[in-house]
Image (cartoon, rainbow, N blue to C red; front, side, top):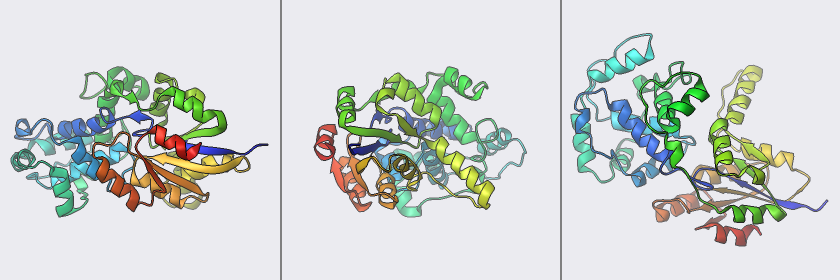
Length: 330
């Protein structure tokens, strides 16, 4: 059998433009989280620029956008004047009652006066973790994870949220931001790449949201193998059951890349992983297989900054677009 190259793609920022969906949902979820507090009406709109958010995303260790949202909320909470954490077994009551006695005046002043508030707070304080916020990011949607639920309601919109979680949304009734996503690569390029290569996807998206994008943009035919956050979570649960230890198999862990490569072990000539974040490059470097990492800048708001971060993470190649990518993998 003739051996072929295996080309694995990240999804968001590589195949799908999520800047107006996932990234903006991070911003809108953050605003919604602080909305019950005093002086919430003084917060600027937008809270911060998406280019500023990218600084936090590129700091690493935040493969999914729920984690990114929590990191941002924690950063901004350093400027919130909180009098007392309300005690309640009901997380929604605990959240709302606590936030209602918080004041956002200092936070509003800071956000209004700074062009890059997230960058400034990250440089000054580093990543923060407040117990109150951590307590609202436990479990899942419908079982106490307030931040994830707010995020999913805004991202999916009422109809998709209800069909996914079999419950009514708590706070958001507007159009889902998932409808704002766009395709970054022409299908003709994927068709060309798939003629002589094997294509796959390794993404931090939940399975249902990856499937939605594949169907919506008619991409399923190009990607016979797709690994998602769901696959990581299932394996993590098995490790806990069998070994009694908690691990994270999301990127930069190479679990998804190794699992895909293992399935093609005897049919592969060269292996490539295309991503848009430093954690993607690290996952390729840590794989048991000899992946070459390709950082792509196609969706970056600040291409220069991202290029430097990808280089620091050990990218083998960095390209601007898919035409440049073709010259490497074909």
